[in-house]
Amino acid sequence: MYKAFLGWGGVFLFALTLPTLDCVEAKIIESFADIAEKAIPGVVNIRTTSYTEKGSADLDVYKFFLQGRLPNSTTSQSLGSGVMIDRKGFIVTNHHVIKGASSIHVLLANSRKQLLAKVMGSDPKTDLALLYVTPDKTAGSFTALDLGNSDSLRVGDIVLAIGNPFGYAHTVTSGIISAKGRVIGAGPYDNFLQTDAGIHPGNSGGPLLDIRGRVIGINTAVSEKGEGIGFAIPINLVRKIVDDLQKHGKVKRPWLGVVGKNIQPEDDLESNIGVDQNGLFGVIVANLIVEGPAFKAGVKMGDVILSIGDTKISDMNHLQRVLTNLSPHEQIRIKIYRRQAGFMYLTISLEEIPKTEDLPVEKDFF
Image (cartoon, rainbow, N blue to C red; front, side, top):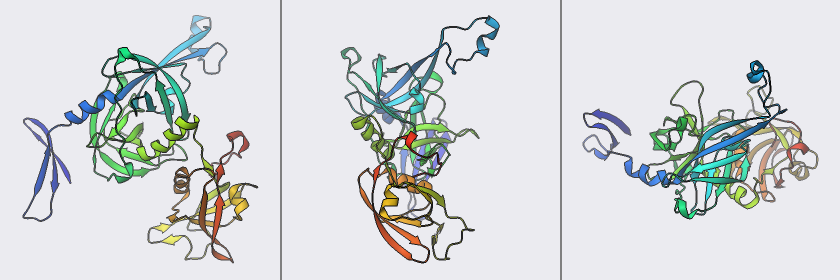
C-alpha cells in the first residue's frame, strides 16, 4: 500500500507493509532521481517533417484562400518520443508519431546530437514503429534501456514516464498503474496499461518505467474525458511486434478465417455453455472464410470457440490478443461447442493473414 505525505522538505513516498497491527515495516523512497538519471540517456526526442505537395488532398486550400494563390507545397513538423532498445541504434516509438513523415530526426539526451532515422518497419494495428539510427562517433555511444515484464505488474505499482511533452525535452513524471487490460477502442489489439503519470502530446512513443527503471510500456494515448488518465502499450506485446519488424519489416500475424461475435444473454444457447463464475465467455462463429484455416479444420458457423490450448477465451478482444502471441504455420487445438453435437476439439493449422485488399471488410474478423 502506498501513501504520499507532503512535508516541509517535499513529497516522500512510504511503501507500507502491514503483516500485523503490532508490526509495521516502512521503506522510504525519497527520490526517483537515480532512476531518471539512468533512464534519460535511453530516451530520444523525435522530430518529424512532412511535405504536402500541391494538388494533394491533405493540403488545406482554405488556409491560403485569402492569399489568392496556392503554394506548391507546405511543410509541417511534429514532436514525439522514442526508446533506445539496444546499443546498435534501434528505437521503438509509436506509428502515429512517424506516420506520413518525409524525414525523421532523433535527438539524443547526452550529446544533444540530432541524427537522421530510418524506418525499419511500422505496424498501424498496434501503433508501433521501429526506427534505426547509424552510430555516430560525434554523438557518443548509445544507451539502451532494459525491458521489463508487463505481465508481472500489479495495479498500484509505481511507474515513471519520460518523454517530450509540448517540446519540453526529457520531462519525467510519476504515478501508478491505475488499471490493466484497458480496451479504449483504438484497434483490434486493445490491451492497454492505464496510468495517472502525466502523459501529454509529445510523450507518445516514450517509455513507461517500473521502479527499477525497466521499460514496461510505451506511452501512446490519453483520455479525452479528463487529465490523469493515460495509456501505454504493454512491453510484452511490444517485444513480439518489434521482433517481427526487425526480422521482416512487417508483423506476420496468424489468422483463423472467422468472423466472431461475443456471446450475449439473449443468445439461444444451452444454459451451461459459455458461462462461468465470471459471467459469459467464448466467441460465436458468425461467419467463415471459405478455404481459411478454421474452415479447413472443420469449424462451422454457429460453433462457439471456448478455448485455444489451455487458454479459455473470454471474448473477441481476448481471442485477438491470444492470436497475437502465436505464429503463422503453428498448429493449435481449440475447444468448441456445436449445437446437437456437444463439445469437441479441433486442430487448426494457422496461416499468415492475407493482404488487407484480399480480405472482406469486417470489423470482427480474425
